[in-house]
Image (tube, rainbow, N blue to C red):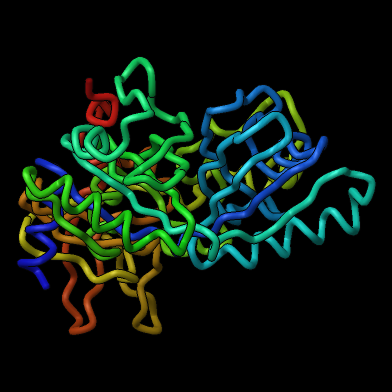
Length: 359
């Protein structure tokens, strides 16, 4: 497993890899009020998103806690495709339907789950553009013609396709969507086109490592229903000028108080030691209480060995963590040991974010 992960991670970072991302949730939204609906359910603005553009967004529940996230593409004037987390697809669709039926019955919007309609392949890495240029001749993949967070219709390996330039790895990347019954043929064509670059198929384990190196969250793993956008350091996605579901709850005293658990990175002194996910975090100088327990100040949400950094990395939520960068904490092990780790930025690799914009 370790050897395969290393091979796949380095292939993506140094050349090109391909991931079958077909399980990601996809919801087709159409109608005159489609943009209005999105503007209500996402924390950031949607009314001015142009056709052919993509936007990342966070959905909150009524309590102001992160509910789901994903990229939405505007396919036409009244037509959008929302992507959700794999595990959240049905939940998000049900949630949207509930709001439409109970609070906004007059909105002219139609929703449909189209997850099974599309085979989705992420072609990722510095050579991804060169691979797709070989199998898609009617899209201009030049950086200026097809910028980051945009969408194009085209023909990939002879199949009509929706191609988005988005990235969950921080690398130059494209997401190719084709009708499900053409999935295998298109996959094989992309593999053949990428052979000269040693294109490498990779799985979700590698995807998790790549996104963690960039500090990208996974809802349900790095969140637990008690985390706000501000706790995640994603306050920039929260509009200060429009209303949205959960906005009022973000201003409650318990939601806005100091000392909430906040999203951070962790680096162990022993670069080879991978912290256990779920590990309880305590203050490095914490003393045991009378009952033999120690107050927990957070927990490890994601933990991996990073091949490109040649060291372990971890993501966590820690009380007041955004103000504790450089400080040490202890993580309790099942055998009674405590391992020290330093609080760091959750972005471990390509901190300036230049690789996904490569020419």
